[in-house]
Amino acid sequence: MAAETHAMDAPDATARRDLAVRAAVEQGLVGGAEGTPPLVCLLDVAGIRASAAALTAAFAAAVAPGTPVLHAFAVKACPLVPVLRLLAELGLGCEVAGPGELALARAAGVEPQRTVLDSPAKTVAELREALALGIAVNADNRQELDRLDELVAGAPPRSPVGIRINPQTGAGTIDALSTATATSKFGIALRDPGAREWLVRAYLDRPWLTRLHIHSGSQGVPLSLIAEGVRDLHALAEEINTAAGRRQVDTLDIGGGLPVNFASDAETPTYAQYAAALREAVPALFGGRYGLVTEFGRSLLAKHGLALSRVEYTKTTGGRRIALTHAGVQLATRTVYAPAAWPLRILPYDAKGAPKTGPPVPQDIAGPACFAGDLLATARDLPELAPGDLIAVPDTGAYFFTAHYGYNSLPRPPVHGFRTTPAGGTRFTPIRPAQPPASLVTEAGGDFRDALL
Ligand SMILES: *Cc1c(COP(=O)(O)O)cnc(C)c1O
Image (cartoon, rainbow, N blue to C red; front, top):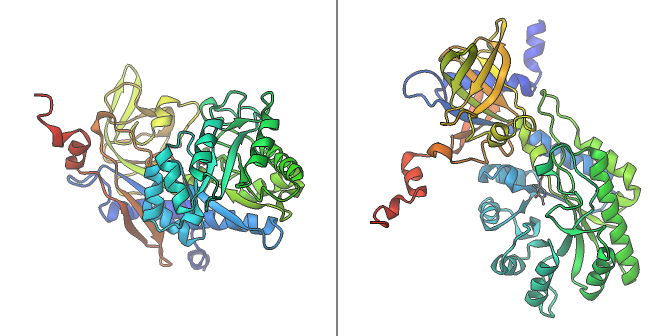
């Protein structure tokens, strides 16, 4: 009876993961048999849908009725066309940082009016294309604004155009990812001498500047600090509009950067908590005077990705136990080079894809690359791994296996989406193929073989 009731419940993310790992082995996507791929990456479609719905719902509940809101997914977090297509289907747009990401967004069918271009080093050609398409552009610096002046040359552009500001509210716990420090490379530094006056003047001189942009959150940045930046952005918009005597700035692009919990399956903080933090810091933000754009990446995808590798060998060296796997620096670059900032969980499964149990033994989880530091975890307490077992690396759906690093000519691993059926089965859909050797050869200049003779 109890088992029946349980089977009726939709499985949660943890249960879906266990079902998917077992099904991936059963269906030959990964495993120990010769000829079976040693490494596969999986994306949980139900999880992605749930995160997109949570984001949309949190803002829909917070804003005054009729307030335009665009959630532009930061493509760099998961640059896979089928994922962008799914998110577009769920009502999201795209935030792109250059021609590659723009091409992906367009291939996914995302309309220009739902696309935002944000790179700090846009070329004239990129700006020209964005303006021709009507894509929103956020200028990063004064010289970029000069270029826009020339491109706009009197005629108001079709594109909404804004300026990115750096509120200089301070760093989070990861320096390389903190965008709002006093000396950050991004945007116009709001607290530098004269900057505020220059910004107000820049808007008054250019009636076509209608947006303000900030991206002050990131992994390691607390919600209160993100909200402080948005508060400063809002105050600047009010100041510009007062000086202009009209609602010249009509849209605030508040960026992304909701941190992700890498320590457990809990999805915290939530979008609802984020919206509540904004409401507390900037009560007027949701009042309907401004349309809103968000640019979330990591928080939409991270929890829904899983890398799954076979344990190829195990050894003990100088008393240190090491499992040699196929999941290394090529898919977890940040963890390998900055392990303290980017710890990942390792979940052990047996050769049949069942969760592996047993007394914990400290083990290093090593990748396949030829350098000593290629480790996903050190002295991690896990049931003793054996060749043919699998390790799953959860929370890798953003910036990990989709931000491939080409060391040792390791190929991009295949990615499959998965859906759990009501009967507890798992259906896989290929999203990205395994990179074949011929593609690696082409990337490595194979077509120019004799060029240096
Ligand atoms: C990377 C980036 C984002 C997304 O950041 P997440 O931490 O993945 O949410 C949004 N906006 C800009 C401008 C970015 O560079």
